[in-house]
Image 1 (cartoon, rainbow, N blue to C red):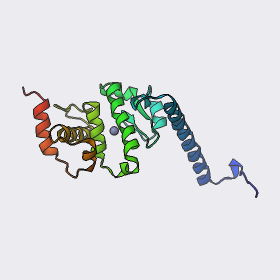
Image 2 (image 1 turned 30 degrees about the vertical axis):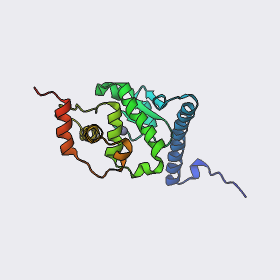
Image 3 (image 1 turned 60 degrees about the vertical axis):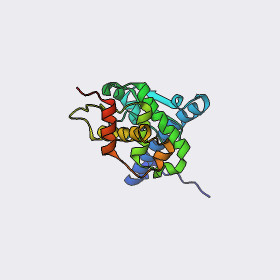
Image 4 (image 1 turned 90 degrees about the horizontal axis):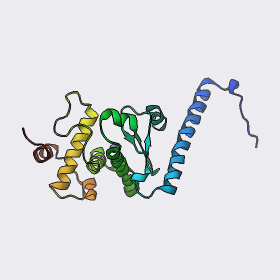
Length: 196
Ligand SMILES: [Zn+2]
């Protein structure tokens, strides 16, 4: 068998592009695996597995499609990253966001492949519940708040209602088919927001 290594100049343009993409993907994966190896060796809890990334550009290397995300948990690697500069800008704390991402690590661990069959509102709502509050203000969200953060606020509200009013366990939430946002909103806002 002959191994033929083509010279760069002789490659067609699509092949050059593919090779560049390939090298970048392998490079990014190697960085993730390094974090994962470190975490598997030294971490004692899920929260230990969350790495604080100082700068936006560093976070973009780990998560190239990121926009304003405060954190990111790649599937099944057992690690997560939080974006310090985005967190500072959003006016929240690293501890809160780390608690959210640590829950995602646990969800991948516990749910396995069935994780992909669980609706977003359940996974994100439970992670927000563990965090203690959503990024958008619970009682008085900003008028120009992003749709994404308003959705997460809804997920938080529904999960809070299901746990604190209906008494559902985390496992029962992942299995439920109802999304009682209107009832939940009334109950949670009534209980958590003081009326002026
Ligand atoms: Zn999340």
